[in-house]
Every structure is written in structure tokens, then in C-alpha cells.
Image (cartoon, rainbow, N blue to C red):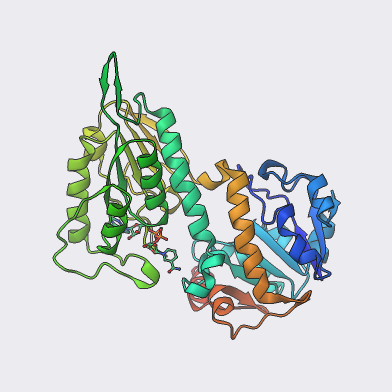
Amino acid sequence: MYLGILKETGTGESRVALLPESLKALVAQGIDVTVQSGAGSAAGGSDAAYAEAGATVTADRGAILENADVLPVVNALPAQEQGRLKPGAVMIGFLKPLDDPGALTMAIARKVTLFSMELVPRISRAQSMDALSSMATVAGYKAIVDAAGMLPRLFPMLMTAAGTIPPARVFVIGAGVAGLQAIATARRLGAVVEAYDVRAAAGEQVRSLGAKFLDVDLGGINTEGGGGYAAELTEGALDRGRDLITQTAGHTDVLVSTAQVPGRPAPKLIRRAAIEAMRPGSVLVDLAAPGGGNCELTKPGITQIMRGVTLMAPLNLPAAVPVDASKLYARNILNFLGLIVKQGVLHVDLTDEVLAGACVAHEGNPANPRVAKLLEEAETAQ
Ligand code: NAD
């Protein structure tokens, strides 16, 4: 069995799907691992380290594409490269099947089996494969560190002979995995932290990190979707959150927003008025930018300065911490591979709940009903 590790080609992408340290278990099973030269160079995996771990390192990307039985990736390959894969090969990664299913049609037509790390079900058996949580953890941390670097103030309270400096005030919207990591990081740096989430269950977690949870009376509506995710709210309920955010923004130095509802555009929660209420020098990091952003002024991928407030809308913050982001991702991938590769032999059993949940396409057909519907709609629209 051939397993290929390619250098990612996306703009700004510096992560790699598997690191040298991940290869031991694969090579021990007799799997032939081939790595494109330079694949891990930004992520702490030199060619020499891959070779030492038992891989073949080559500059011939085409050979890897054409021979691989299993291709773990960070991002989906471009269409023309999908067309070079072997029928029956398996590609696993952040394939964006619900955001951009059309980008996978070539691989589907080529009868490549596609597994999406975004669709791994949130059940306890699959926790070690939860790459979304791994990346959200990195992004939450980095958002605070970047904001602290931009802020013209200090985070901790300082009592010095020259007087006292008050602590920075951080406000986190959305207390999921990224939000909780942002809260923990901001607390470690000494900031005073407030947080808001529509899920009441988030309150306890926020308080356990030493932050204040801001409660909004949403009239007892159900705010919980499946798998710990939030449900989509009515405009009325969203408005109550928007009011709270505008009020809180006035005394906030750093606002990190992470609110998302799976499969939907990010809810617009931060009005222009909230940004106008922030003091000059304060910073917003809109981590929901890949889904359009939580702020109505957000331009995904672009940093703006408005009335002295810096609005950051990073599209791929985990790639700014490639070594540890790749370490976590590689472990998630390796655990996933454990479900489809047994004693060096590839065996895809779609009766397994995790594989069935994560499978986007198999043997030329979309395996996920939501993806199938989206592809059908796209075809009819043409
Ligand atoms: P996410 O990235 O989908 O969303 C981030 C946060 O935004 C969520 O907490 C959500 O409630 C919040 N949000 C959505 N709409 C909002 C609005 N209008 N206003 C304010 N906040 C809003 O979520 P996530 O980070 O992936 O995690 C969500 C939950 O799932 C967390 O409690 C997490 O601990 C849990 N989780 C469970 C598992 C598991 O069971 N295996 C794995 C990972 C995470």
C-alpha cells in the first residue's frame, strides 16, 4: 500500500498532513510512505527527518498523485490533480464538502473515496480524530496573541512605583472550542475577560476559566443543535445578542468573535455601532471570517483600521502556527487512518459510524446526503 504526503499548494498554507513522528506506526505495518520534498519544511518536518522515519522523499509530485492508495491532505487537491489520482484511492482532509462541493467533482468522477475531517461525527470514539477542535484550539490561542501584539496597551494589571496600569478587557463571543481557548489564553496574560454564547451550557465552562459569562434572556428558546453545536436563531433572538455586544464593546479592548452555526453563514452579531463604540487602539479578531464573519464590517482575509480600531479577519490562523497545528492535525489523521488501514491493508468499511459520517463520496457517488443535494442543485443551476 502506498501512502503519499504532498506539499500543500494553497496560498499561505504551511501545515502538513503527517509529520515524520507520525510515520513509525505506518512504516511498521509495511506501508510504503512517499513524501514530496519540502512538504513539512514549514511545519518542523525536514526531508531528512521523513527519510529517517522510513519514508521515500521525492521531488516528483506527479508520481505521488498517480501511485498513492491513501492521500492524507490538509486541503483538497486542485481539480486537475484530482484527475490524476487512482480510482479507488482515498483522500482525507479538510475537503470543505458543504462549502464548496463543486471543487470535489473531479475526484468523485474519478471514483476516489473522499473523507472529510469536518464531517467526523462528534461522538466520544471519534474525539481523537476531531481536527476541527484541534484547529479551533490553535486559532483561539493565536487570536489573543496576535491581538495582544497589536494592542497599544498591556494585558496584565501592573502595580509599579510609577503607578498602576489597569488590565486589558477582553470580550469573547462564542464560547466553543476556539472561544474557550481564547478566554484561557487571555486570562493567562492577565486580562479581565467577559464572554457571551447562546448555549447556556457554555456559561459554566466560561466561569470555570475565571471569566464572566454575559447572559441574555432569549425567552427560553432552544439554542442547542446536535453535537454540542448551536442552533440557528431567529432575527429577534439574534438582535438581543447584538444589543448586548454593542453595549459591551464600549469598554472592550480586544474582541474575539468565534460564533458559528454548522452549515450556515456566520451570524452577523457585531454591528457597525459596536465598532464605533470601541476605543481607538482596540482590536477585533473575527475568527468567523471563513464563514463571512460575525461583524457586518468584516472583509474576510483583510485587516482594516476603522476610526483607530483594528479589524482582523484571518482566514487560516492555524497555518500561522504550523508546527503545533500540524502536530495536532497529524495525530487526528493518524487516528482516522487506524479505521481504514489494518495491518498495512486498506479496507473501507462504511458500516462504521465514523467512516459513514465522514465519507463524502465512494465509488463515484456522493455518500453524504447533504453533499449529494448540493451537487444536484449546482448541476440544475448550470
Ligand atoms: P462552533 O465553532 O460551531 O461555534 C462556536 C460557538 O459559537 C459555539 O459555542 C456556539 O454556541 C456559538 N454561537 C453560535 N451562534 C451564536 C450566536 N448567535 N451568539 C453567540 N454565540 C453563538 O462550535 P465548536 O467550537 O465546534 O463547539 C461547540 C460545542 O461543542 C462546545 O461546547 C464544545 O465543547 C462541544 N464539542 C463537543 C465535542 C464532542 O462531543 N466530541 C467535540 C468538540 C466540541
